[in-house]
Image 1 (cartoon, each protein chain N blue to C red):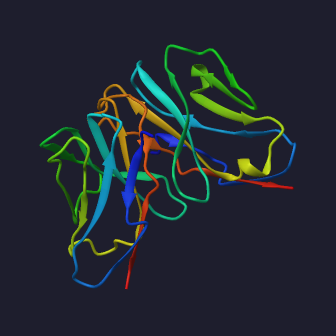
Image 2: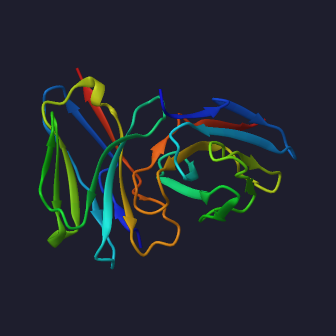
Image 3: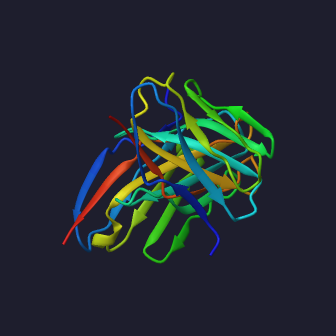
Length: 113
Length: 116
C-alpha cells in the first residue's frame, strides 16, 4: 500500500536535546512538507521541499532543521533552540509543489520531559 | 487577518441530524484551490475534497456535500444523516496560485461531535 509513514508515534525530548522525526513516503511524490499543530489550532508550515537536495523555510522554521537526501525521506530535527517544541507534527507529500492535494502521515507527538 | 475562517469552533449533534460546517476564505488570486480534511481522534489528516476556483458546481459524495460560492467566498461542507464515525475535527484549507510556498493555509478547524 502506498502512503506516508512517520516515526515514532510519541517522542520525548529532554532539555537541550536534539531529536529527529522520521517521514517516509512511497507515493513517488516530489514535494514534501512538515507542519506543526498546537491544540485548538490549524496547521502551520515548518519546512517544505520541492525536490531532492532542496528545501525552504516555512512560516515557523526557527529551531528546526531538515534534509532531503532521498526522494522518499524528509526527516525533521527539532533542535535545542526550539524553546516550545511540545506539539503534534505532521508530514505531508504531494505530486508537485503547487496546488496539488497534500496527503498526510499519521503524525508524531513530541513531549518535553 | 485570517485567510481561512472557520467560525464554528465546536458543533454537537445527535446521530442522523444534518450538519453544515462553514468555511470563509480570503484571497486576491483568481486561481486558487480549496480543500477539506478530516482529522479523527487518531490524528492523521484525511483528504476529503479539492475544488478549484473555476468550478462552482456543488459536489456530492455519499452523505457528504460541498457548496462553493465565490460571491460570498465560502466553501461549506454538509454531512447528511450524521453518524458517530463522523466525529472529528474538520479543516478547511486554501492554496493560492500566488503563494510562494505551495503550502496549504488552514483554518483553525471545527470539532464535530456526533452523539448516539
